[in-house]
Image (cartoon, rainbow, N blue to C red; front, top):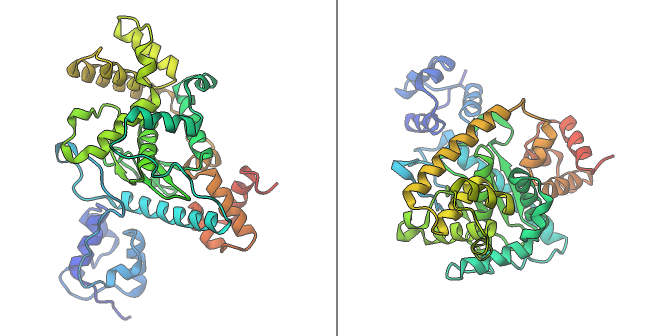
Length: 388
């Protein structure tokens, strides 16, 4: 059977790209070591299997040398202690999935005569964070009084996501690539990203992060949409402005806006807070329906905690929340409810309707929604109310 000549450098690049151990791949493809030595090559059928295992299009293996794979979006991440030098295949593939969804939805909206969204790019890094945060809360109807509808800060996260979606922002949340539970996303590598667009702005939140982290990420990425500067972020609640180098003024600004969105300093300053930090933390969390981590951050901003005291309290609180989350954790939940969080329901409904009306190929709809068969498609359509 005919063999395909492949550059050994491309073979090794493809393996290392997904961090697959050499021994693991060699067990699956017995002649892989020989291929690396330039002794023969895989058959086309073997190449198709190899491409599937290494999660690459088959055509990539015909390149004469490994490509320089870069993030498809600007990189605003600050990598502590060396961090991730090369973007993972999971991050890159997740961005590509969201870019395709965003392009499809943009064309769908533009083709149906929808207006541009006025708030996209309406602010600038030189603006006052409190003013920009006020505009965001107003656009989302996220004023403090309305938060009483949320029973706690986790319920507030669901409310926050729903309000952002109603305002016209596509919000996608996932802890894996598509629906592949074997390809998890690492919050240490990135917490979220934003794609700025006047018709279909998109925010992605790393669902593998803590719920407290997701609240801050959503607020942070919305700030990116408001200044029209999309990109990848790894900022968290304990990333304080003074920790950033001068080149990270965009992230410093978005962090400040995020904190103001969640807990406006003007209102916080007027609160009669207890002297005890734990009581003050609880009071802020209850009043603004935010996590205790965000409450600690704002106590630091208020001058009630030194940097060292804040960091110690933050680390202890984060450890407590992680332990509580493990105790609460149950088995997976309903797939369609999970998918409803992963894929923005406005986007999913539009794709399903277009497929049912013959405007979009069914195969393309499956790929856009990260589903594999018509049974799942039909159940999701019923779940969203597109089919009865």
